[in-house]
Image 1 (cartoon, rainbow, N blue to C red):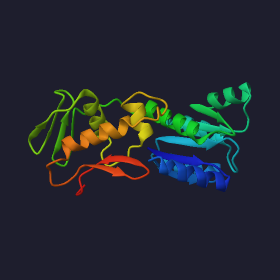
Image 2: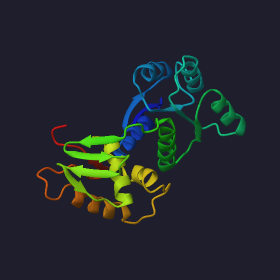
Image 3: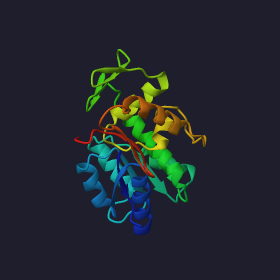
Image 4: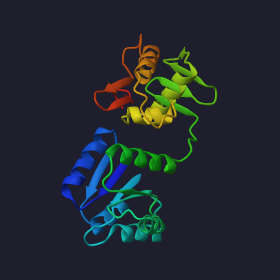
Length: 226
């Protein structure tokens, strides 16, 4: 996902951008409400992370302006104001979620990814192709270089998700939520085992690997020439 952090505290903004990128997402930052509004209008972001108290234009006014212009980009409001009235005001201004400071980054990330899923269009593509690897969602068949590949149900679901986001680094958290429907890390090697099995089926015996591990970040399906 592409994320925009609108936060006037420089240290906080730098931390969030760095942590979000390490989690496999693209992230930009704006230090005031006017800059954030301009970037949100032009940047084609998937989720906005908006501090409530901002110079030039406060976070709630920023979101209200975007909603008035018809923008539907999900927005997570960050604020030290945590009363029920404050949260209700934030949500009624057009915010989609409200997180009170101080917060754990893991919770912020989970909320951001939940908002991103909510805004994802339903998959309409029935066929994914990466290099010479082809996955057909309707027939539930996979082939590479014209050779049929037999996958178990979970392996098929894993490959489908990776190919749907071909070229994008997919984190363990994203796989747990989208492929295993876990909203927490069960601290097992279930992902490693399935990725290893999938790699042996789609890459073994072929000259170029398509399933790559990005150390410290996650996994990506891509052809070297793409």
